[in-house]
Image (cartoon, rainbow over all chains, first blue to last red; front, side):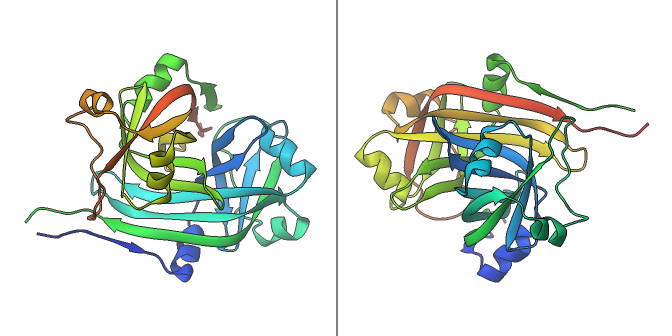
Length: 138
Length: 138
C-alpha cells in the first residue's frame, strides 16, 4: 500500500513547473468584489504573461497602475489523484516591450475568438507549490 | 474551418457543472495577502463543501466568522483547447450539520494524507461560467 504523500516544491521546482503553464487562474481585489479568472498564460519562471481583452476590469485596473495579484497554475490528474500546483504572488501591469520580447514566440495564445490584444505581465515576487500523490491500494 | 466560440453559461448550466467538481481553487483576502488555494471540493449546485486542515489560515478565519470568497472549478482540455469553467462568489463558514448531511457520501475526499478534518461550506450567492472551444483547422 502506497501511503501517498504531499510535499512542498522548492523555489526552483516552482519556477520549472510555472514555465510549463499555458493556462491559470488569476485572483485580485476588483472594485466591487474579489475577481477570480481563468486566463491563457505563459511564463519563463520569473514573469507571467497573460492575454486579456482591452475592456475587462483587469485591463482597466492595470492600465491605471500596478495591481497586487495571485496566480495559480497546476496539472492535476483526477484519475490518479495526483499532480502539482504552483501559486505566485506578485504585481500585474501592462507588459513592457522587453517583457513581451523575452517571451515572444510563446506569447499566450487565446483559445477563444475575440479581441484579446492586451498583454499583462505579473512580476513574480513570491512563489510556492506542492506535489501530491494520493494513497493507492496494495 | 471551425471559428471557435466562447459563450456564457446559463445559471442552470453553471449549477450543473458546479455539481461535477471534485477539485477547485479558492480565493479570499487573508490577513497578509490574497490567498489562492487548490482544494478538494464537492457541490450540489447551491453549496460548495471544502475540506481543509484545522490549522490553516482558512480554518482560523472561518472559525472566527463568515469569509467572502471566490471559488473556481473547470474542466479544460489543453489538447483540444476547449472546456468550461464556473466561478462562484459567496461566503465561507464552518459547515453546519445539515450542510454536511446534505452532501454526505460525496464529502470531499482528500488526495493527500494528513489531518484534514474541517469541512468548510460556501453559500453560493452568485455564479457565472463559460464554455470555450478553440478555432480548429479545416
